[in-house]
Length: 318
Image (tube, rainbow, N blue to C red; front, side, top):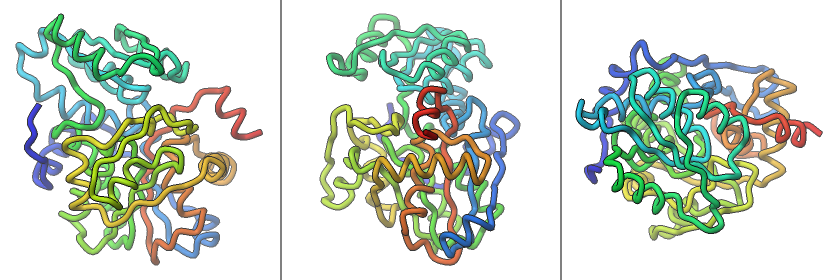
C-alpha cells in the first residue's frame, strides 16, 4: 500500500471514476431540526448509497484501480459490516473473487448481505484474534489484494466524494459534522472541504466509549482502544491509520464525542421525525448537533449509513 497521502485532486479524480457507479445521494432538510438546533441543517443521506452506506465510494475507487493481475488473484478485506458489503458488491460488479474477514459478532443483516453479494466470509472472535493479522495471513497465503476499510489512499479519496456532493447543494456551510471510526470518511471529507470551501469547519464525531481519534487529535500522538463497548459498531476500530491520522491532524478543525444515549436519541429522532433509517454509527453527527454543539448558521451532517438490524432498532426505539 502506498504511504503517500491523498490530496484534494485525488478526491476530484475519484468523483469522475465513481460517476455512474455510485449514487448521488439526496440532501435532506427539516424545519423541525432547524428549529430545535437554531441552525439550517443539510443532511447528506449516504443511507441511500449502494449497500446502504458511504463505503461503496471508497471500495469502488480502490478496487477499480487494481491491475488485471491483481483483480485475477482476488480481493481480501476486513470489516464489521459496511466495508465488507461494499467490497463484496464492487467485486460482484467487476467479477472478482472476494474473501471478507468479519467478526463473529457482526450485525446479522450485514453478514447476510455480504454473503448475498457472493463473498466468502472468514469469521473470527475479536476478543481473541486481531483482524489485521488474520487478513495479512490470508493475503500472504493466496496472493489476494488487500483493501483495508479506511487506511488506503484510494479509499480515502473515494469517501471524500460524499462531501463534494453535499457542497454542490450547500456551498456555504459553516460546519460539517462527520462520523469517525478509522477516519477514512473524516479525512476524505476534510480534504474535500478544505479544497472546495476552506472556510467551513470540519468536526469529527466519536462515541465517548470509543474516543481514540479524539484523544489522538488532542495530544498529537496516536491513541488506541480495544473493542470498545459502543452501539456504534462501525467505530470499533483500534485507532486511526498511518494515513488517516496525519490527514485528521492537518485538515480537521475539531473532534467531539457523544454519549451512548445521545446516539440512540439521534437514531430515534431520524426515524420518528425525519422518516430516515440511520444506523448508530451513521447518526453520530446528528447526535452531536442534538446534544447542543454550536455549528453556526449552516451545518452539514453526513448520515454515513443505514444498515441497522431489526433487534438493534427495536431496542433503540423501545
